Image 1 (tube, rainbow, N blue to C red):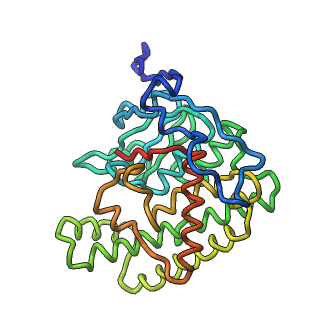
Image 2: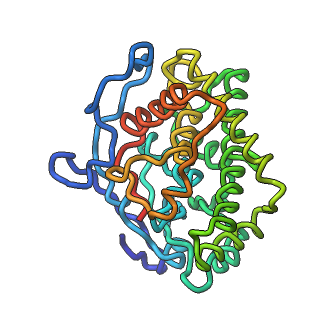
Length: 312
């Protein structure tokens, strides 16, 4: 990172051979078990491994607002927020370097971020003169504009609509992530094992996202329906969730599947409280079908997004 004469910060990047740097292990590699029959990769090949130093670099909000290049302000501190993981995955898969911004102040929360950008939610994406982007769809469209390969939104309108529509079932208000969050709030507020600190987190989230006790049964039903829809799509037998090439839908499911079962601790170290809260067992889909869908998540991480997941 270098400071320019005008005082702004520029992120400096350097590629390294994966054999010479321990940080290379976050990148996709051909190692690991082969995909199950019927799920082989077809028209997409994995990228060669290299390390981008800026991946591990955290900027303060003040530094990040002055910096140039692509910057992402994600949720951190042991929580693999699905929206943040999807945002990062877009640019990892496209091999676009980015720096990370720690936007939450220990005392002021996201107040400074809101004052600077009008956004009070994470992740937020920054790039040059582009307005700060906090919408998952805006972030996907921006990634597609930045690099055409690999293409993550299909060119045909029918397939493109399918990908964006199913992504909305994961990412949008009243989608899977939204309703799983309401169920997490209910646990924080009602389970006797949680103390006042956890209750405080629950009250904050309840106020921010409109939780009330009457919403829990509706949230449970929505989550079950959405998982069942993804089970049906995965059971169709394609190598990916939409056709025979990787799309943003595969990345979206990979990120949001943490709200069913987080990745193992050895590849996704996370806060113990949130690992427990994230874990949820669908009741209306068979364990075998859900397990296969989770297996698809693991393949996408292993072959495309890269492991381990870093949420420090």
